[in-house]
Length: 132
Image 1 (cartoon, rainbow, N blue to C red):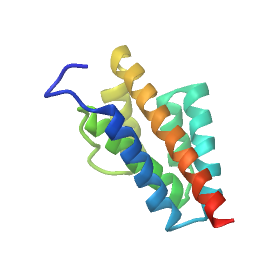
Image 2: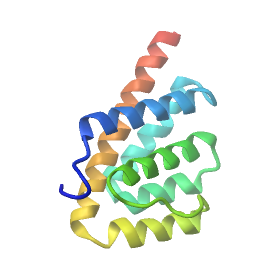
Image 3: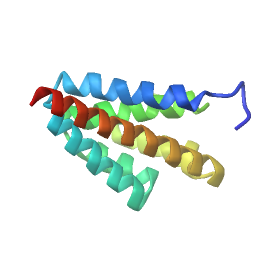
Image 4: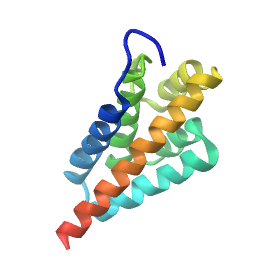
């Protein structure tokens, strides 16, 4: 990955995952965060990046909005610009034009977003265990 300097993925991914947990846990229980992130991860793994954003944007929950924002932050840290707004049509057009059109970018984005959601999922499970 060569661009304006290498991005340290071992720092970026857990940092964004922790931010998902911190922000989402302020709005919902750790169990609800775990469920939401697990579902998003399943869509990402089975259907891809665009489908994952589509799924999350179709939800009207605070958790989904937070996950979308943090996933966009991950992509921004990989050298992609953020969309001009967080409305579904703008975000989906942004993903189509800036992520999915290039196979190399798409594969990197999927891998990094998947790892972010996995860390967020485990973080939510850890928080749920400590709340119990």
